[in-house]
Length: 330
Ligand code: SAM
Ligand code: FES
Image (cartoon, helix red, strand yellow):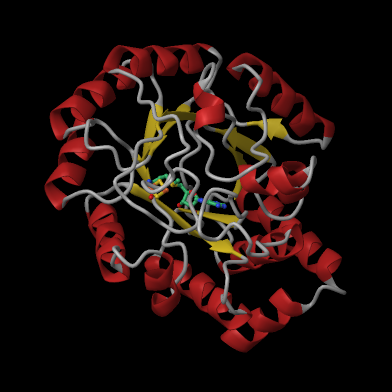
């Protein structure tokens, strides 16, 4: 297994990046095969009680036109995504307390009837809520730790607690969810050493899925004038993640494609085996603006599904037909 110093060297080595990405692609092929699992992403609310400095939908951004789907609208969006062939629905939102435990449980139970796996990505909740959602039928939970540099984490959101987020991840795992986490790269003051520690942390946590995205500064946030992450560093980080955890699910993240028109395909050729096309409909797509230049904001779910499907076939890969759960190598 790679040690911290070796990870740092790989992350720093821009010159031999192509070799690293190729190695990750080979490991991906060997451990998880050539299938690409598609997850239909519903961005069902941009209302958030938090104020993370980096995030476009933070509470303090008064320029955002806020929305949340109502119960029926959300269920109907999921029904249509299932009809397009998605076998996993990812329900993502800000921390919006309109979605109470009973309301979310009703929604989860209704969506489960469409024969899909459900991933929740709704941030920090209580143990009892996580338990209730799991019992209602939620299969997976996605919550990035963002960074393991605690000082940086608390600078990026002085009101939040790293320890609490970590405890939420432990609770989610204990409750039997498939656990997805991940980080952003290119945060202000984030060092390569700290990214190496993040990767070792994700390995230690035993995640089933890990998403690596470049930080992209949003003009209406306090970090508007920061540099942001590069696609190269995000790809190298993702590739090292594949080497460290060879059998997990790794998404080609939307933020990567926001930096480069072929970003997701580049990621699929560098260790990724999952894509999460947006199945949110209409105006909501534009309003869920975590960062600028978000892709596909004027497209329809059907268009995104067929566009990514074609791209995947063009690189000689197949779209997964099952639920795409983490298959642990023995
Ligand atoms: N509220 C939920 C949570 O906290 O997990 C889910 C929504 S949150 C917006 C989803 C992810 O978006 C975050 O975990 C973060 O990594 C990413 N994100 C937010 N702002 C970003 C930015 N400016 N650039 C890149 N990614 C960003
Ligand atoms: Fe809550 Fe970004 S600050 S989703």
